[in-house]
Structure formats: structure tokens, C-alpha cells
Length: 458
Image (tube, rainbow, N blue to C red; front, side):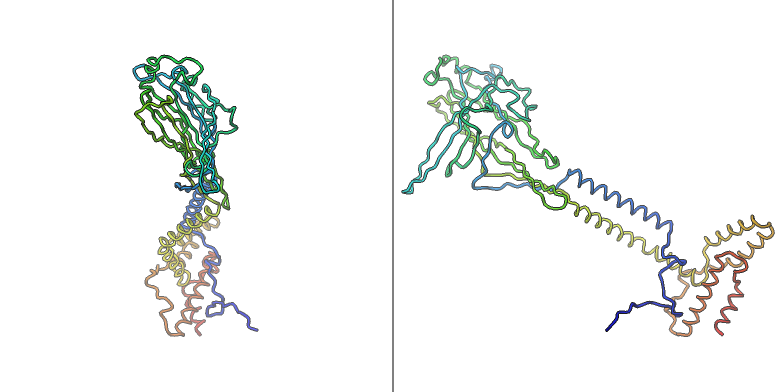
């Protein structure tokens, strides 16, 4: 059986080589402490900055696009999805004030239902049904949560859809009129005619005076998506559509209502999609007929569902993404520090190594020796303290050897010279340890060192 044996690196005395500094596995320096503090501060800043995105959910990755669908999802019109109001204004020369007078005009609102029937012989029959939709004077309750945007309007002079209909449970538009069963919302402004009303209308002169150059105003809420708003991305605002009417003209319009979807992936670890649906009204497309309508229509608009769906997709930061970003940032900073500080670290390491092997003392250690001498002088007599400082100065005063003047052991090819050099270094290292204890009886003088070296050679 083969057994894997761990390889050890040993010196000439079969002592394992360990990466230690002065007998310790860790070494501290002022520069290292400063860099460690800066690096820890950077990590704390990264955790706070990236973690804030995780909890605040302010800046999601957002894309939006339009797509075409053959059969769009049915759309319900109510005070929450599509609140609106409409009315007529007098011509400019009469002050543009809103007015209601059923002896001049009246609103006609219906739900148009188209049904397509395929016969056995292959023929297609298309039928149309009209369902009346009740209207009433507007109140703030007709606008749901969007009521603050309608407070400055003369609501008593405007028309709104009744919440509770006599003929319908819900007002739903759906389908495509050309080839499927469909439902559309129809809004018309009709001139008063004695043949179609139960009461007498005003004279044609009075009607023409108020309707020639009058303005139809439709006030509604428009959708604007703000991806940074996590809970309520649809920031609705009030807008209006205005069109001039006249008894001598007939206008028709087609208005498309679009689905506006917001898909939010707000899961912390896994994908979790939440869909919010809103309604967006496109600008009406008007058609002008210079011939007056025989039914008295001044303006007739159809509101249909659109096959274009606008989608916003929001993806929020997940926990694993934050951890990966922190790890990447930390690795980048460490790489920069290694590249920038490598020359400095190498110089300091070489200086420390030379001082350890060749008994070269730095000025900092001389300064420490003086301090120790002073402390001893205080404890003993003044004369003994001076003698101790003299002895320390003899031992500590060495010539500083530059790094570049020291030859690397690898440059010696002769084995005997290598062994001699290693032995001298070992003895010198032992003497340095005695010197650090600062005991006079343990300090080796240069003469004693030379004798120790000569004895080891013999």
C-alpha cells in the first residue's frame, strides 16, 4: 500500500523551515494596520451600499417593450381602472364655460356588442347589439383613488358613468371587431331633435348659437410608469382630449386602450414575478365628415381594446448578487494593494532578513537600546547606568549593510562555503537573541563571536 508522505522543507540541521518572524507566525506593522483598517472600511461601505439596494428596492434593472397579441385580455372599465368625465364648453366668444342643457344636446353612451356567427354553409353573419350605459353628474366618488386630480373641475357640469348600471354588471371591452366577438365602448354627443326626445328642443337658432364652435372636453387619467416606485409604479395624472364640434359637421373618432403590464421580480433568492395591470389611453384618431349627420350626431367616438401590449419588467437585486459584488470588489482592492505594495514589502522583508542573518541593527533598535540603558540607569546607580549604556553601545554599534551589497547564498556554488556561511549565520542568530534580552552577562562581544565561529569550524 502506498502512503502519501507530506514533504517538509528543512535546513542543513534538519530543522523544518517555518514562515515566522521573531518566533511568531504573525507580524504587525503600522503600515499593515493602516491598510487593514482602510480595507475593512471599504468592505463595510460596500456592504452598506449594496445592502441598501437590496432592502430599499430603488434602482431595479428595467426593460420595457411593446408586443403584439392576437387576442388581448378583456379590459374592465371602472373608476379604478379608467376614471373619466366629459362635457361641452361654450364657444370662445361666449366664455368657454361648461354647460348642460338637454334641449340643446345630450350624451348618448352605449356598449356595442358584435357577435360573429359562422353558418353551416361557410357564410359568416355579424350582428350588433347596443346596450345603454347610464350617466350622471360627476362627483369625486366617480374617480376612485385619482380623485385629487379632478377637484378643480366643475363636476356638476360634467357627465360620469354611474357605478351601478341598470343593464350591466360590468363594462368590459374585448375582442377585435373585424374577426372575433367583441365589445366596445361608444360615446356620442347628439344634437337635440324633437323627433327623438319626449320634450321640446330649443329653436334651431338657439341651438346653433351654442353649438357652433363649441368644444367637447374629455378628462381622463393617463398612466406613467415609474420603475423606482416599488409599491405603486403607476403614477397616474389627469389629462384631457379636446375637439371642436358644430351642427354643420360630423366627427367620428376611434380610440385605442392599451394594456400596460408591470412585471416585478422581487424575490430575495429565487425568481418571483408579480404582475400589475393598468390601462393606457392612446390619442383618438378623428375623421371629419362635412355633411351633417341625419341622426344629429356632433361627435361619435368608439373606445376599443388595442392589440399592442406595453410591458415593463423590473428585476431587483438578489442576495447572491450582493455577495458576489462584495467579493469581486474585495478581490479587486486586494489585487491593487498587492501590485502597489509589493516593491515596498519586498524591500522591508529583505532588510529584516539581512538583520536576522548578518547581525545588522537598524537605527530604530539603537534607539530602543538607549531607552533601555536609561531605564537601567534610573533603577541602579548613575555610574552603573553609564557603564551599561557603554556596553550596549559597543554591542549595538554596527555598520549598516545595504541590501544590494549582500550576496545571496544562491550565488555560492561550493558546498563547503555554503555550510560555513550557514554555520556562521546560525551562531550570529543565537548571539542576537542574547543581545535582545539586554542582560550584560548574556551579551556576546565581537571577540567572543569570532572565537565561537573558530571553535565551530574546528
